[in-house]
Length: 98
Image (cartoon, rainbow, N blue to C red; front, side, top):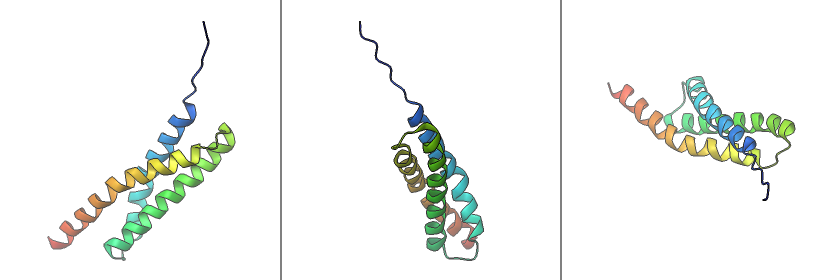
């Protein structure tokens, strides 16, 4: 019988990094860019969250020695950004009209 071990630690770490960067970095950068227009705030929030994910995955890559970890973390962050940013833009437009 063959013994095959599948280690998904890097994948779970990348998903956690991507989710944390998108859930924490996006609202934080959105609030910090308060005086800008909605589209500029969206771009700044996306770049800030991607930068946070890249920085966190660089440290995790060094510890886990997994080179694909950064790509998975950035991809997860980008996918979550595609969901979060349109919601933030629509919520801001509703608040300014009311």
